Length: 220
Image 1 (cartoon, one colour):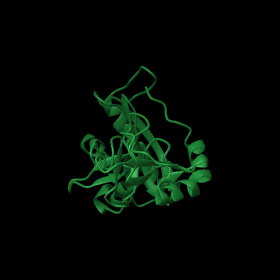
Image 2 (cartoon, one colour; image 1 turned 120 degrees about the vertical axis):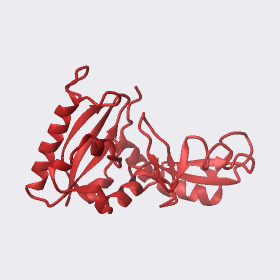
Image 3 (cartoon, one colour; image 1 turned 135 degrees about the vertical axis):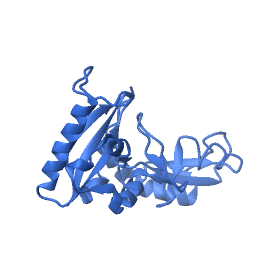
């Protein structure tokens, strides 16, 4: 299984290099050397700063010639451009993708998708009776492992992990309980949330190779 890199270290390094990268995007030169196309040795005609969903600072530069610009992706293989914020993001570091496609066909980074979905009234629940298996399966993937964007808006109550295939509650490294046990645990978390808040939301807040985490959140 792929492991998530040290996000804090990546962010610290990105802050140090931000001025240099931003200048390189404008000039086409990085450390005095002409940026070349990522797919051939031609000089890059297009330079894109790329980001991840863990900070607003660019992590690197994609260089593309006229022939390879948008040829293997948008703008290149392993990256995507968010239809809301317009930034180019790395697709993933681990098994978890950092984008989603909406019903309208928009491709959004998870941060922009988060902003859209928490504003929708029908995503919020007001009773533990609303926690059905259908509702759990419909939980939106809005938060990546290690993501912090949600911290500005929501408070975490608790989570339950489920097996990707069977839906059974994961209780240990290689052990599971029943699906109903997982639902009961989520209902308990919802009841806890509603003691001090009028509503809460179920969010798929981590996707691993074999399991997913469903978290209960309330507005701050």
